[in-house]
Length: 589
Image 1 (spheres, rainbow, N blue to C red):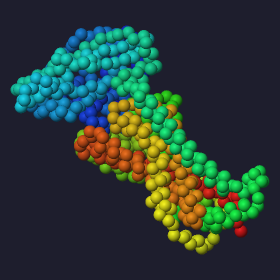
Image 2: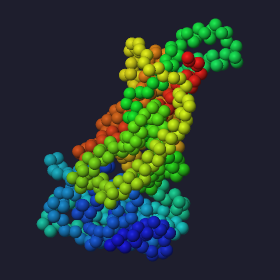
Image 3: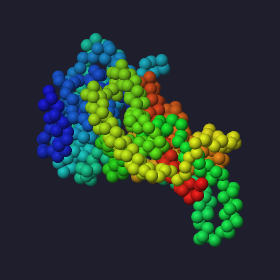
Image 4: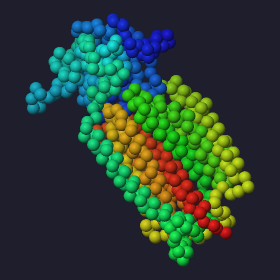
């Protein structure tokens, strides 16, 4: 059995170039309701004809994580050999089988199969009301004949299709069950030479033929980028005006500003009064540093995924999930280093706990959410449930790679901070033992106002691109515009960082030194807007059922949590550099 699994795996990997009459692997995958892409089931859970021995085919980790379950089929296909209509089996349907097919057709169920490495999606059947009179029941027509049209070039399969225009020869009426009802399932194969399709682009063109990206869509993408760019320019202009005001005294020898004017500016500037409090460690610094470190790691993961997508688009099914898992593993040292380095500079003593919490800040909630959803999927019998060997593999990768790298990065970061702090303070200004009294703030200086502004402005830079990403994750489209996504992500980071710096400056001028958590709260604010958009997107779709709904809302919640950590970390580091810069320019006693 294992030998057979490895054999078909090798065929899938190295069988791209075929000799004439060489066998081509046809794999059946999964089925799902069209509006519920996460509610996936095994193909042979439905009463289709199946081989005597159902044998799994080779799959990557990413394919398993996205619910693929490739198995062998009854369709015998050989390179450049035409096959006239051939019956593969005659299936006697029970009343329960017919009801199952009718329910699937009602729910617009789709099934997926692979010819070599090329995927094909088709509906179970159609529901016809054309000939139905008023008061009569509609007719349920099941697809029982697959007419394969295969294209080849340079001894490789470059196109695979099943006739899209269904007519009566492809369908069988299963509206009314009768005792001994038998359905014949058949197929045919026709080969065509397609010299205009290069083998290197076969998979890309196969997917784009069913999921095209029109010119109008590209216009909308560029309009979103221009909108984000204008917003970024406005915010950066305001930011530069403030920077010029802050460092005006440093530029006096170049601008020849009179000393009297400089002194007047210094007296009016409230942020200088906080030099003895601005670097006071925040409350719950262990959790703060762990969140910043975990956000830095997730930022690295996103950058790696997007850059890999720019180099070669993720047309292989499950490639994004595979790259995401690997990236998260190898960037664990980034999270440990950033968290421990900051924690040591803030005078933290529980460094071991800090590293441990850093390793769990994202994985912990993710594990809780996944455990619940995996249990739901098991109850429903869905392929969205991870197989037990995959669960063991994921746990082993975290325990043997991710966690040790987090510890290693934490140890390096802590020792580097200790070395940098020998004989001098890690910050430009010393901190008094007693905290300065914070004056009452006005309504526009409240944390709620800041969270609304720092959440809305960055979110407005990406909400249009989110529509296409959601259509890819929760719909049939494949996202391929990673260059535009890279621009959108870069502008999101710039807008979030600059808006946070601006509000931090306003608060420091109001003599409020509590900037640590407020700078991080930008990520939380954007995550709130993101989750509200998730709810809006859900209401625009036709998703139904408990399984699909909990998968959508809980995984969206996990993504919002990751977005909060990522943007919170980026916003904090931008603010930290700004605060460190301006206070290093003043001479405080």
